[in-house]
Image (cartoon, one colour):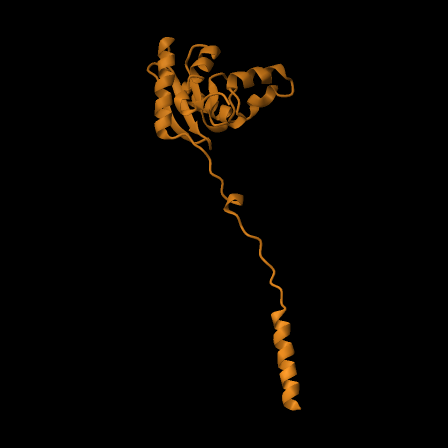
Length: 175
């Protein structure tokens, strides 16, 4: 009788343990934690600098150029002969402004000036509301920016900066 009782108790204990339902932990996805970002390379920055300088030369202008990657890190800064030293920092800040606002700085300047609510955008320390900064795009994503100074006029700086394209590879200054 004791043996049967022990057998019944052992079987019921084993079967109770077999009925335990495991709860599944949610799967972690790398896509939730890591995102790839397209970025300009140094090679692209050198090619863009060459093309932008050609545009400036066609206007008989020496310019300073700053090119940033998608994170706002400076890739390349050049200063043309006889261009004032203040233009290198102005170019970097124009590029930063274009990158962070995703807007050409001439357009941003004009829009801010026309709207009383945004006139004080120029009071933000790093933004520079002067023409000559444009975002650089690839497949609808911003991959960097360029700032140009020393072109002689707001329109020239803007025109020269907008020549920062490698259209055969899909790198443009328009979205």
